[in-house]
Amino acid sequence: MAVVPWQKANVPGHIVAKKLKPDKLIEMLNESEHTLLIVGKLEDFELEIAKSFIIKTKLKGGTVVFTPIANKTFLETGIKPEMILGLTDVTAKLARGWREVNGKAPFDLVVFFGGYYYQQSQMLSAIKHYATDLKKLSLNRYHQPNADYSFANIREERWVKEMQTVLEAI
Image 1: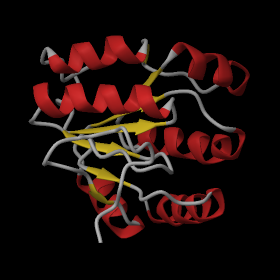
Image 2: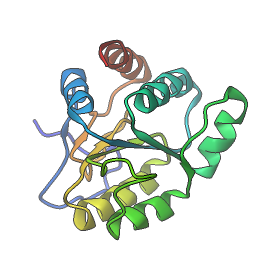
Image 3: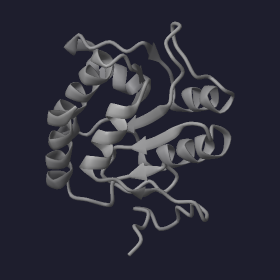
């Protein structure tokens, strides 16, 4: 059975995201040469997982971009991104061919963590059509059909458990 978008009005077209399972996420993160992690607004239950995920991404040499609201969330933690950009701005840059920061290898994987569902849907749609060379992941607990891989619509507890499994393995 196909996974359906969380919002029924989200009509993605004939190419839709595959269901993301922890083992596939671990595989994709480990194979990525240069991950771009885009962090948006986070729910309270996502904060600790996000902190760990950001730190692991940085340790692996990935690039972290915070939206302004995510930057505000992390001001007191000491975790700093390479860039602070609005979600629309980072998406426009990716759609126009932006692929590297500070001379690092080009991005090969774009990971969205947090943010408003409807906004992430539109940003993923733009990247899906204009940055076809990039793999796109959504780590939110609601299915994003415009990504290449996205979790199915799952409960908070299951999402936390699956993300903890991923963090232990990467």
